[in-house]
Image (tube, rainbow, N blue to C red; front, side):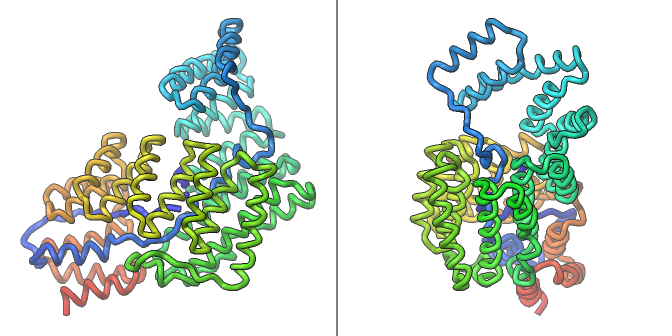
Length: 485
């Protein structure tokens, strides 16, 4: 999932073109165009984690120093019991012994597979395999196993919940909502189902908002994205449930974030200085009330869970208090030193308040903890913003090495090479990206740019004009005025 956190929007470009003599005479011209096409929209991506595992009120498993010996002792007594190996793998992950954990996970997978072959109706083995594949990003395999659970256990919500997670991870929100509605219908007293539905609403809200440029945001209505009715229904069945109450506050916080976007869109166009929010009096009052309740939760039910700290970080940021946001980050990270969510939030807050050293520090730390494609792309993007193109290229190449056909990596490499006036080198990457999604609006935008490079002004003007409805008008207008006065 990518699903991902507060952080900056990735750059996306692509095209197919043949380069020739350009009407763009200087590097200054190139920078002018690229800044308007690729300059980041400094929009906040809210990355509060509402995963069931974090929200559940069930006590966390705390491994003592002697637990590894105890688990290994159990393995010696029952060397074919997959659950023992799974417990050992989880413990090693908590202790950041990733290579050992991966080795144990392979054994675990084989043992669960053997269990399933002996008994094809072993729903426990099937569920554990589904979760393993889900964690590894093997979507098709995970989907097949969760579908099998829905067949073998039609009255359980487990399979539907898993299918929803896969859909959410792939930003396919409508099926995810349908799956979770089935899960809630099957097990209306299961709090985790409500948690996952809240998670879905959060992710969809983030995804929908960040599809738009800041000049379009003010046409949206956050009320259409933030739906609390299912939580209110859950609270009728479980009055006073601490998890559902916390989720309700979190959704209300989401509404405040949207209102902040709507009211401060002019400050989020990517061309200003540090972001400073002006909140409506009602939003300010509700935000402070949510902060008080969230702070109380850090002392009681959710003391060692990261989600209230993420909420408090975001709330402090909306209150224009980045130092307090940093304080909440430092408190939350004690309970989860490897939290992607907390690091993403802090990186975004630092970047949006123009504390570059802080942003780089947290982003590079995140890369070392979670060496994933999304994190590498974000690091490349940070370097791109600072015009450190060689460094940005190094991080983008890491992604291409991991996933040669990655859409954003190929687009990013093309952007870097274009900024460096290396048009022929950029062409191969542009073609790879366009092969994935030739109708993407950013593909068409760069096509127009490349018409300029290829000295085809009429085609360039026509393409720029056709893109005006999907791109901020001032960007297109400024380009047209400069090159087609």
